[in-house]
Length: 233
Image (cartoon, rainbow, N blue to C red; front, side, top):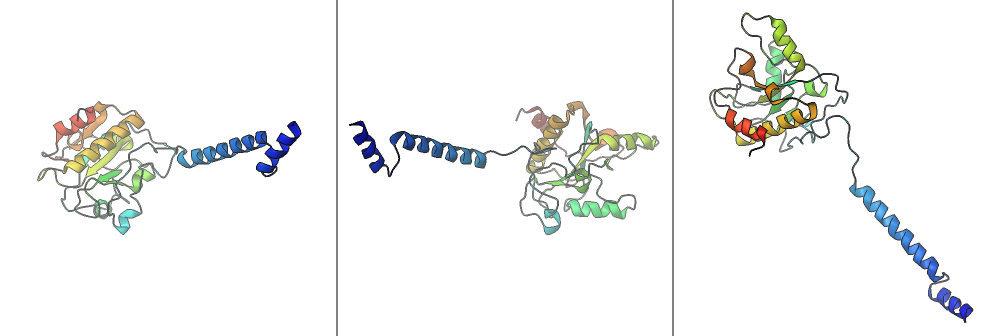
């Protein structure tokens, strides 16, 4: 009777016993599960991979080379000890990172843009609120954005530039308000940099706090910005 039953099971299953079929089904299900797990699981990237993603809304060809998803520097070794963040405006309503870079180079003292990040307003190659990652941040080079106070030792400003991340909002804050998208992107960028680099609220400055300048201007939304940093909105 047992031999007949085994023979019938082998005939029905194409030559395999029922325990063999159960085992093969189990192995097949585990293979499918493992393949699904590998496809849906990502490997964490090193460096600044936890920074917010830059907007990629309609960048120009020149901008596309440097604006990308993610704000991690191309150089992943964080040799610079960043302890401050300084917010600026570009001074021009129709502007973008390439125009700013050309002005900085044409001044004769710089080889590239002085800021680490630029946030567009939609007037230029950068979309409204788009975060542009500059070559200076990619290379983790000291900034060139904090101006020296009149009569002060230039070494003071030089020291600030070595440890301060420069963020520039496209626009002129003395003439017009920045866009809501710019303010939100700025707050997102600043809070993420603070979290990643342990930068305190007291170490986030406007350029006018440190130098004899108006930047980022009288229309900069101080209260809204501070509220966004505090997470109340």
